[in-house]
Image (tube, rainbow, N blue to C red; front, top):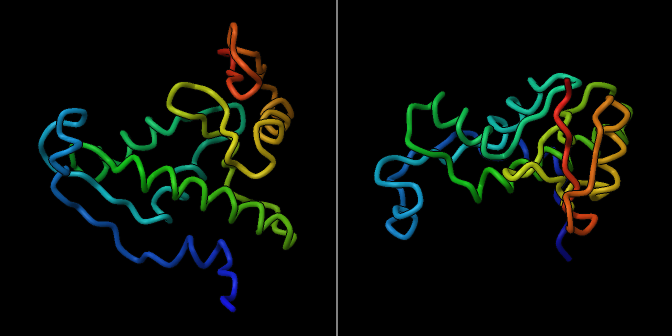
Length: 153
């Protein structure tokens, strides 16, 4: 029987990022050039910089990392996976009594909606954001999974 790997181990497992040519099947969308495959800790460190009352999207994370590493784009698949790993690690840390955890709930999908894949799902993310003073509303004609954040004045 396989033993379960702790989320923290998954977060820290990859020690180096990679820079590769943008795959040909993705060049129509991202163009030619170089793509960063970040390490999970790169993504986690960026999320940790997002302060209460502020938000960031997956797209903004990818753009920031691409700029930092001087490449054309950041891999959308690994970035999404690593955001999820950061979120699960944060909740694992919370259960162990750590007070300062990665504020994954401040990361929205690229379209500005909440993420059902985070621990606690959309309702968990919504509750954490509302606790920080964000106003959440349902996008017109959309289901609960398409909640959005209103812009603060």
